[in-house]
Every structure is written in C-alpha cells, then in structure tokens.
Length: 65
Image (cartoon, rainbow, N blue to C red; front, side, top):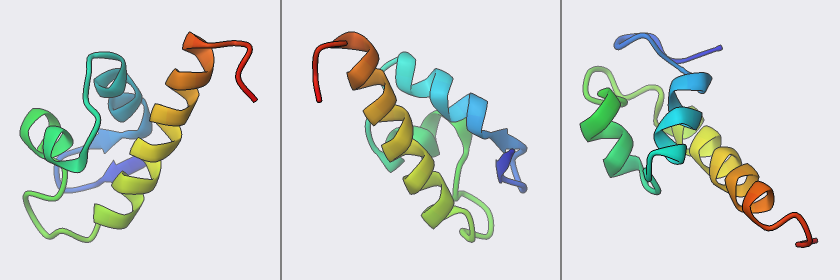
C-alpha cells in the first residue's frame, strides 16, 4: 500500500528502512522523502513506522509478549 503518494513510498519501503535502522519520522523524511511534499502522509507514515518497529522488535526477541 502507498503511504506517501507524492514520493511513491510504500509500506514495504518503510519496513525496509526500519530494518536498515530508521527509527523516527525524520529518518523516513531524509531517506525516503516521506512528508517532504504535501505532508498528508505524516499520520499514516508514523503509524506504519510504529508497526514496523514493533514487528522488528518482536522478530528480534521471539520470547517477548
């Protein structure tokens, strides 16, 4: 699913960015261009970032609840 239409950033792109160390919206802005145009993607990008970071944390520690 597209998160940032202006820069053609998908949910998969954000997941990859998290795997590469992105951990805040600023990282997505600089690496992917998220929210650099119209800004309407900020809420969706932040939510996607949070989900990706949570997923990354759980995959790194399979015993966490």
